Image 1 (cartoon, rainbow, N blue to C red):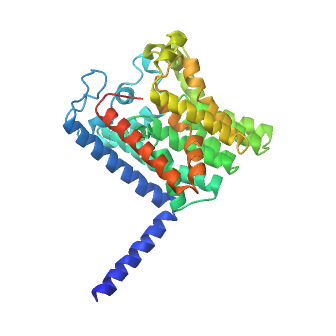
Image 2: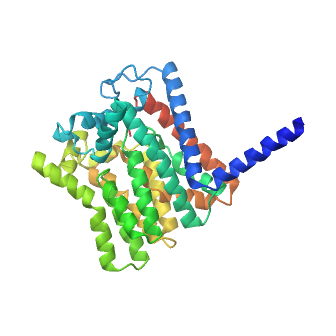
Image 3: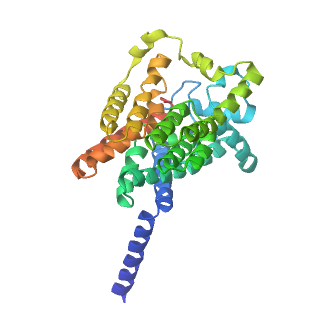
Amino acid sequence: MINQTTESYGLKLTKLKKTILNNNLYLALVIGLGLIVIGLSFGWYNNRLVPLSTNPVARYTAAPHNPLSFMSNWDGPDYLRIATKGYDSKSLTNFFPLYPIVIYVVNFIIGSPLDSALLISWVCLVGLIYFYLKIVDTVFSEKGSAGLRAALLLLLFPTAVFFLATYTESMFAVLALGSIYFALNKKYLQAAALALPMSATHITSVFVLGLIGLIMLEQKAKLKTIVATLVTGSLGLIAYMIYLEAKFKAPLAFITSQESHGWLSTGYRGLASIDVFNVVFIVLLIIAAIYWWKKRLSFALYSLMFLLIPLVGQQFGGFNRYVLMAFPVPLMLYAVSRKRPNLYIIFIVMTTIAWTYTLLQYAGGYIGS
């Protein structure tokens, strides 16, 4: 009887495992919840052992008794400030509006800007995993456990911890990856529909719009279709520029305000502040561009676009976080290791160590990009 019961439970677990692995939404939900639990647990425990940063701008102080406040450091409080007070300073306009707007709306229900922001980021985390799994299936015709292995290389990217925090990264990623997925499958209306809010979420949305255009050119879409898709996708950014003109008489304030954050003001001597992560990411972007050049030129050119960030901005601040959306990099790592399990393990171990380091540093208030 006991053996029969054990076999029955084993059969049910096997069926459940197959159901999860063969359904991208279930798989995304399981992975997302797992990352959230692990990230919060590691960060909370680390902060009990290690002294927190004393930098006054490093931490969110408006909810000191909220046990999750350590997930809103550095830029995180700025998004919460915009959500509760609006753009009361021109220096905040480099933070795009969609994420704060949604926080503002959800806050009416939850009553906590911090909890609202985290909930939005975590829901978007599940969504971005779902669309990434769909992209993996589109590019490699692989799903299930293979899709899981591919997804881990994105989700354990060193700066992927910002998917868990009160940053716009999760919202930007779900909209960007969704629009890319639909573009890859020639569903241009859906791609434009997601690109529209995406362009009001992050400045690097212009790179994603460029990628969508390149994908459509590869697919030999009609010129009027390409133009219509990209114009529609740009409406979020255009709406933000109209707002900035009305409020500050400066439609490009999201660019000029970068100077108050150290961008565009140091000259190219600011590039001398390069760190190890910067070097690694630059090398990975170049390698990814080489790898994709003859396979998917659009992916190669998109990877190279991210090298413009330090060149135009004249420094590396935020570069490590922005590169998070250079998804052809983890796709390339998966492609070269998919039939080399030992190499895949090496990649996973290295990325997990870097992810954990970044998580603990962020939770303690020591780094924010």
